[in-house]
Length: 197
Image (tube, rainbow, N blue to C red; front, side, top):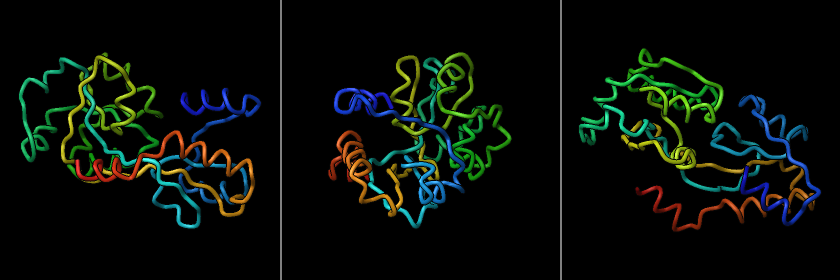
């Protein structure tokens, strides 16, 4: 949002934005009936919408810098097995983070569920809780954190912008879609590198 708002202030200072969470199972209907203009995110359940692929992302493990888990260097299967030593915080709005814990049989290690990723920096910084978060979000948290990249199941995903075909021809709608693409769409070679990394 900060980058989008800065661009809007420069290019269209009169435009007002509202951002809010929306129930995943109601996104398609909200887009179609015009209650919401756009949906950003990893939304594979949306079938009858138009979309613009923005970037490839990956779930990572976020820990506070200096966490005892970081003392031993592990990779591959050994790293995944060692995750059982941790206790976790998760975000309700990203069901895949909880699904990853289930697939790894670590759901009993879940100690805290919060509503949004913005609550995680202070929680992780002040505790020994670990969190599974998108890498791009974690990079924005600033200093004081360590990022570990286990080979989680379901770890790679695509973030897209979604909208309804009903509003595709609207000039303002098209202008904002193009602006979002300009600001956030990775070049094709960046998408390929992210998929291979």
